[in-house]
Length: 82
Image (cartoon, rainbow, N blue to C red):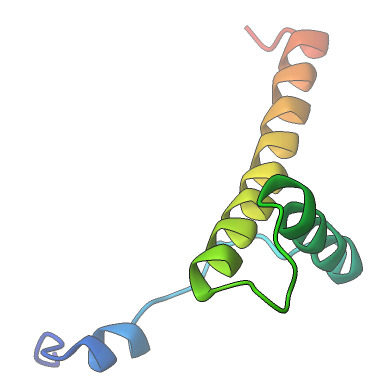
């Protein structure tokens, strides 16, 4: 058994991405990211900061999760699994 990670870099190298679903379409993710950067945050790439990119990415991830959540809820409603 190895010792627990001590530095932030060691912690980052031990993060596992097992079980995270792959993005269905990279082109769609890029498009959604740019849409959020321009229309949600009202920023252009020339003046955007790292925080703006973070928020645009967060909105993009949220959109992906919400759409999957809604599809799951619709499936449960249609099939009535109880």
